[in-house]
Length: 373
Length: 124
Image (cartoon, chains in turn cyan, blue):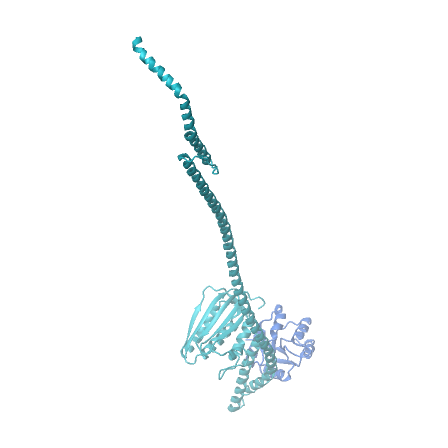
């Protein structure tokens, strides 16, 4: 046994002695290994962990010029680059945030601007409407002013003719009365009777002119009753239609149905329609068309009578309502002035629009509620 | 015989009416102007009808009508006028039963006058 284990023990001793002899050297080797390999690796690991936590300013302190030194330098460079990049990202994020804020501000401002513009647009719209309304009012005022001037003029003329008519009626009564009394004398010869008849007839003609004048100046209120204007106009049209057709004048009816009734003197109303239709016929010596339109216009019934006749120039138009003003060879110049008087007495309005060679349209408005008529 | 009072400030007109009505068998009393009309109204004469001019100086047709009412005279009246002022009187006397039918406008057709007079007097 001793023989077997003797060399082994010997070898073991040798190994122990060798180990002990090499121990200091090994220690040095370990120390050296630790200093040059392990520590720099630990430092690197620590620094990487620090960088991982976001501490980008951490630097690996390895001053050796070997692979570790180079690795540490590269690592530090990488960390520096990372820091730069991170800073750039931070800056970018900051910039993005800044821009986002600006964008939001802009968006808000834009929305406000849009709202303001909308308000402005609606105000402008309102303004336009207001301006249009204003223009309409101004036009209405001008028309009213024109009518007032015309109406003033007509009123003074009206007073004059009324006074004159009254003064003329009495002597006319005396002439006419005496002629009528003499006619009752059977012993008179035929020639004398004829002369007296002529006197009587001419007195009646004068009377009718004067009565129309009186109607213009202070139209009689006549008999007021509820009136269907369509029906009333229709009966006048029927009366004239045939006679007009002989002069190649056609009458078109454009009546709106279901119009409310108005309170008016039908006889006078029909006289207005008849006068206007006769005027229209006279304005179309070669024939043509008359269109009568009835409609509801707010608080008024509106009647338009349009012809395709010769029309009037402005100068004629401004005098159209004047009594005794006529462009017709055999006209009395009373037709339109009588119409004016009657419509005025019914608290209505009458207007004539005309252009030479383009026909004439007469507009009449009659109030639905004829207060004080 | 029906008695008619004719009132007009124009004598010539009153003459015509008087002559014409007399020719047709009426008894006519003529008053030139409102004052004379009131004087005649104040007498005992029982008139059946009055033809009254409206526009007259001093006392006009309205004045005559008022006096007639005061005197309690109930007979009918026809108004004669050269103007359309009669309508104003008509309005005043509307409640007394006046209508447009009661107004005659000068110059009057005598046949129309006769017709109206007969109607007022209920003579066929």
